[in-house]
Image (tube, rainbow over all chains, first blue to last red; front, side):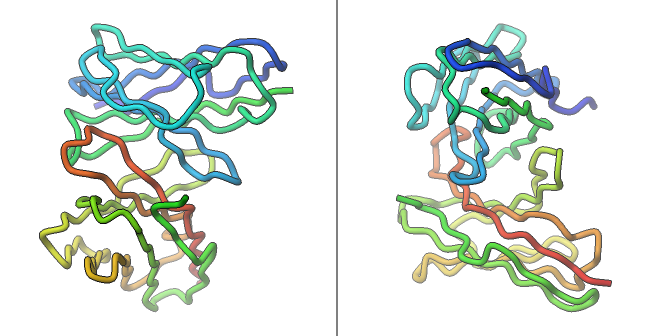
Length: 113
Length: 113
């Protein structure tokens, strides 16, 4: 079974631009969660989508948004990029939710210059 | 306000000995706890979990202990192997909260041969 895939793996953008990251979950998984990992803040929950609906949302500004398609693939968008958005963005999928195990992708490393 | 804390940023252990990683939490609503291992350039990998109705869960060399009254959990690795060298994250979740995990800051474990 293929794992969680994320594209692109690396991305360099400049302040003010916007970016879209993609996540393909494990086949059959309906829940996709997004996390931001930075050295100072650790792993922080962004949001979770389940069956195309946002089910949970973390404490991030509205510049961070996402969506999920009918095939469970998910995209995350960040508009008006700031230097502090530089981070590793991780996507995780699971069948339905806790206690189902979340499987993480390798992440997208975003650098904002 | 960090709801999940790993107070030791790093831990060094000799191969064959026991590694004990600790985690404290403040939110009494948390009722499901997980440990993840992360290698550089990879996403976190699920290790072991425990529900709040238990105080111990064992899986091979990995055992997680939960002390609800102290709001403390620990991961024991016996015997430790050099391949266990990685960053370990504890995470917590509230029942019926989908897949929203709150992570600790991580502990870097180094197992010396």
